[in-house]
Every structure is written in C-alpha cells, then in structure tokens.
Length: 233
Ligand SMILES: Nc1ncnc2c1ncn2[C@@H]1O[C@H](COP(=O)(O)OP(=O)(O)OP(=O)(O)O)[C@@H](O)[C@H]1O
Image 1 (cartoon, helix red, strand yellow):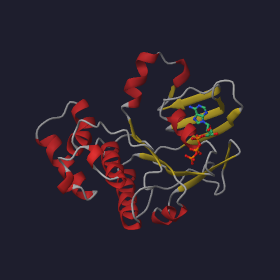
Image 2 (cartoon, rainbow, N blue to C red):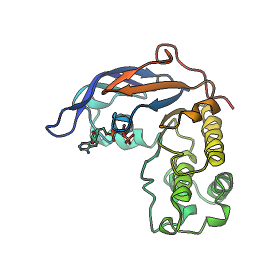
Image 3 (tube, rainbow, N blue to C red):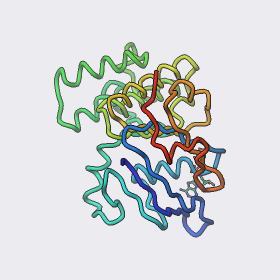
C-alpha cells in the first residue's frame, strides 16, 4: 500500500472543515484520477498526500510510515520518492528548461550521460527539444507545464502526484502526456492525477476514479475497494 488516510479532516485556520472523514487507501501501482467540482478540496487532498499540509485530525500513512509521528527530519527523504506537478508549475526561473528537468537527477547524485540522455529524451518526448535552453519566464503556460511534468517524472518516483497536469495543453499533447504517465505507471509508479477533464480517463482504461464531493471521498467505480489495474495504453 502506498498511502492510507484514516478519518482525516482538514481545516485552514479557524475556518470550516473543508475535508472530513477521508478514509481510503491507495494501492501500490495504482492509477487514480481525483475529480470533483472546483473548490471541493482536490489540491488540499494532494497537499496532504505530498506532505505539504498536515491534517487537522486523523492519520495518514505513506510508504508504510505514519507520517504524523515521524520527526520533521525524516520528511525530505519521503518527499524525494514523490514527483509533483504543481498546478502553478513552480519551476526555478533562473534555470533553463533543461536544468529544471535535470534537477531531480542531480539531487539523486547523477551526472554526465546519466543526466544528459534521459533529460534530452524527455524534453524530446514533451516536444521541447528546441526550447531546452529557454528559461521558464520566456516559455508559454503550456510549455512550462510540460517542463514541470518532465521534471516530476524524470527520476521515476514511487508516487507521481499531478494537479491538473493537462490544463494548459491541447488534446493531442494531453494524450501524449497521459501515455508518459501510463508508461511510468507500468514501471511501478503509483499515479494520482487531479483533473476536471474526464476525457483523459479513456486514455487509461485501468484507472480508478476518486470523487471529492462536499469534502468527502466518493468511490463511484468501487475502485478504492478493489485496487485498480495499472494504467493502460
Ligand atoms: N491556504 C488556504 N487557506 C485557506 N483556505 C484555503 C487554502 N487553500 C484552499 N483553501 C480553501 O479550501 C477549499 C478547497 O480548495 P482546493 O484548492 O483544495 O480545491 P480544489 O478542488 O483543488 O479546487 P480547484 O479545482 O478550483 O483547483 C476552497 O474553499 C479554498 O478557498
């Protein structure tokens, strides 16, 4: 099991609880879509999952660790096992597209051809081979999104979390990116994608859908009870 949420609740400050009684498990190797109306709390749930936000109550397990009882010093090592595509990309503006994508490999201690080959191949796959030297502020929104995706997947994380990863690209590129996620999933990465775009789901026939409604998780396809197959295509 990759993650477990037990009676998790979240409120920001003194506001009303926006997520309540989240009770679900994510199976290793699963491919999950997180859907729900705008403001339902999808980004907030993802933040809990990638350890950027503590729940107000309940327990969260990740990679077999009870994350609330772990010392803060243990969190960076867990985070390095997660690739994240942020809704607002969060690229490093002073680094080229190439160096943004290379960063996770450099942090993992690689150099030379062990960086150059995968990064060049990845930039090619996302259609940015000719933009490798460009800095993020000079890229379009869709180009930045593709750099963010390339960076998130390059080190083959155990868990990939993507918040609206195809929101800024056209339908053909969305398909291409979905194939990238499926390929990674077939290699063993558990994938969680928050999206409004339900047309993506047909690109990954084995995927499961989790629906957030009024702060609670619904399980319309029963996928949370029966762990899903890996993403197809
Ligand atoms: N840091 C924060 N402080 C206070 N309230 C917040 C914060 N982040 C989110 N919220 C509120 O929590 C609720 C859920 O927001 P969230 O961004 O998780 O929803 P979402 O489903 O991802 O929405 P969208 O699909 O529009 O991105 C919203 O009412 C939002 O205003």
